[in-house]
Image 1 (tube, one colour):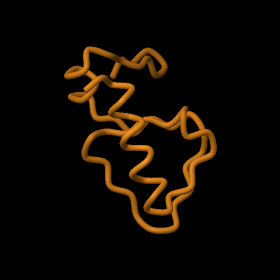
Image 2 (image 1 turned 30 degrees about the horizontal axis):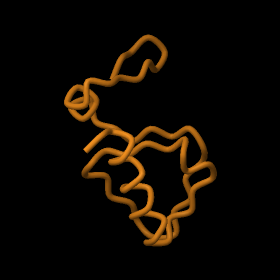
Image 3 (image 1 turned 30 degrees about the vertical axis):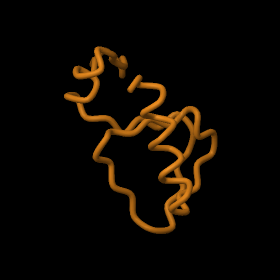
Length: 67
């Protein structure tokens, strides 16, 4: 499964559970992310573990730290 397909699947899962996302296409999750009730996620949030980024051979630069 491609990284994009995985992220779409995770976003859909959380949206169906009632998580509110402003700009869901800008939000990224780890495979094992857990989110509580009544949560609203702002745009451009990245909830990834370093190992997920390495596993997918992708990374994000956060102020000089690559994850």
